Image (cartoon, rainbow, N blue to C red; front, side, top):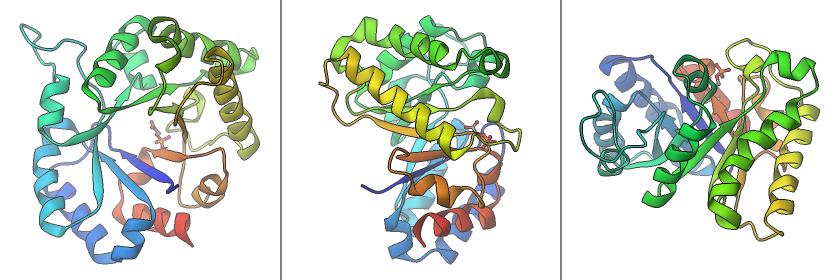
Length: 254
Ligand code: PGA
């Protein structure tokens, strides 16, 4: 299966920067290269429609991802964007429970569960972010924290909760710090997540992918993407610069 790279732009970019970025990707990657990796871009939601047009015009094989979604469907919810609105704008993936949403917007496991359900019902692909903070890591509570984050969803949705979904292991201490988890840590945690879900669902899980995110860059992406337990990578900072982003894609291929 192709490995995936997701560019999570967070609150960055404008029309010109985004357009130039896509033009550069078009210019510097061949069709074969573009088709060798599953490329997914999470620009701020307001640009997704524009981006879809550019992608179509340039015939780029790139998929759209939303950084968040409302758990409400319609009504008096100022500032929110519904799953239907995302679907209408050709979004394929939705990030749910990123640590910046958990920390800066007080999203707890209950809220994240509601969002996860919305995405699953709509048949878009949820990317559930899980991960421990530094204090929890130091107290050796990583597995406990991950279990809590994942079990909430399993308890509610049962054995099929994670069928055709993605879990992104994103240790909070590694996000935006330049200090990625080691390959061993990533492999161990990915194996732990898969085993835990297999155990919980009596091995009935279908097509669960596990990605890693946290200070992925053009240097460590090759090694990370070569691991069989790493199905994809979620990249923040290093995805903002088109030159580096293109280099990362090439490093995943060659
Ligand atoms: P980073 O962000 O690559 O800047 O560490 C990753 C993320 O938040 O998904």
